[in-house]
Amino acid sequence: MNDDRWMQKAVELSWECPPSEAAFAVGAVIVDANGDEIATGYSRETDSKVHAEEAALAKVPADDPRLPGATMYSTLEPCSQRASRPTPCAQLIIKSGIKRCVIAWREPDLFVTGVVGVEQMRDAGVEVVELPAFAEAALAPNKHLNLGGS
Image (cartoon, rainbow, N blue to C red; front, side, top):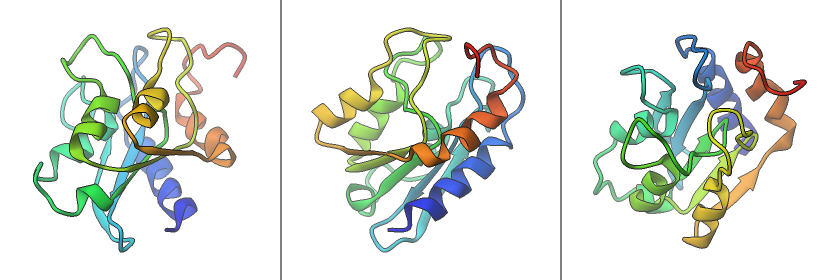
C-alpha cells in the first residue's frame, strides 16, 4: 500500500473544502486492498455539515465487498463525537468494516474536546497508522483557524 501517495491525494482534496470558521478542512480517500481508489470525499462536499470520511463512505454501497480490506486515508483524526449528525466518523468507519485507517494529524481540542476517534477505532480492531510527516500539509488549509500557535 502506498500510504504517502494516498495521503497526498487526501491533502489535495482538503483544499477543495469550502472555507469555514467553525470546522476543519479535511480530505479523505478510500483505497481497496489492491491499491485501487474506491471513493474520495472532503469536508462540506455535499452539504455544510458533511465530514470528509462521511462523504467518501456515502459514495460506496454499505455491502461493497471491498470495504473490509480497504484503507481510509484522512488528513485529520476521524471524529468521535459531533453535534450535526447522529453518527461520528470513527463509528462510520468501524460500521463500514474498514480495517485500516491512516491519518496525518490528531484533532486538537478546538471545536470539541476529548476526541478519541483513534482509540475508538483501535478498540474495535481497526489498525490506525499516523503519518506525522504529512501533519504540516494537512494543517495548511486550516491555518485560518485558531489552533493555538500553529
